[in-house]
Amino acid sequence: MKTNCILAAACAALLFQPLASKAQIVQSTFDTGSDGWFVVDINQQTQQVLGIYPDTWNASGGNPGGYISATDPSSHTFYFAAPSKFLGDQSASLNGTLSFDLADELSNNLPHRAVVFQGAGSILGYVAPSPGTNFTGYTIPLTPAGWTDLSTLSTPTQAVFDATLGGLQAMLILGDWNAGQDQSSLDNVSLNAASSATPEPGSVALIAALGISSAGLLYRRRRPL
Image (tube, rainbow, N blue to C red; front, side, top):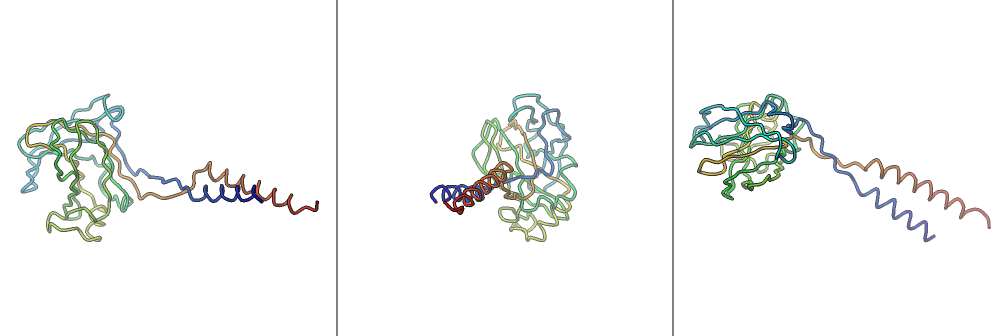
C-alpha cells in the first residue's frame, strides 16, 4: 500500500508541473545582421518623424551574439524601428508579449515611453523603467492594461488595441533614454503568442510508465496469496 501511495503521489506531482511554452511569432536575434531594423528620430510633442537613419550592426557583444546599436542623432528622441516582418496583422500576439533586451550607456534610471505601436488610426505607448548600461530584459504584455492611447491619454479599449495589432504600421522601441547624446543597444526582439501550459514530453512518458507500474503492483497485490 505504501508503494502505491508513493507512485500515486509521483504521478500527481508530474501532472501538475506544466511546461509553459512561449510561441515566437516573429523575432530578430541580430546574429547575422540588422535584419531590416533602422532608426527614426521623432518630435515627441508632435509625433512627427524628423529623420530616418541606419543602425549599426555589431557581430559580437550582444546577449549573446550580434546586436544593433545607434547613437542619438539630434536633441529629439530616437527609436529603433521594426522591419516589415513585425508589421501587418499581428493578431496572433494578442494576450502574448513583446520581449527584447536593451542597454543604454547613459541610462538615467527614469521611466520613459519604451514602446510605441501605430496602426488602424491609433498610436499606443507603453511606459517602462530605463535599462541599465548592460543588457536589460523587457517583457511587455500585449493587453490594453499599461498602454496609453496617445490621442486620448487613457487606456485603449480592447477594440482599439485589437485593431492596432491587427493592422500594425509601426513598432518602435526607445533608444533615447537620456537628455544628452547617448548610445543604445538592442538585441533579441520577439513577438510572442500567449503562453500555454502543457506537460513536458518526458513527464508524459514517465507518467505513463508510473501508471503501468502502479497497475502491475495492484494486479500482483490482488492475486491470491
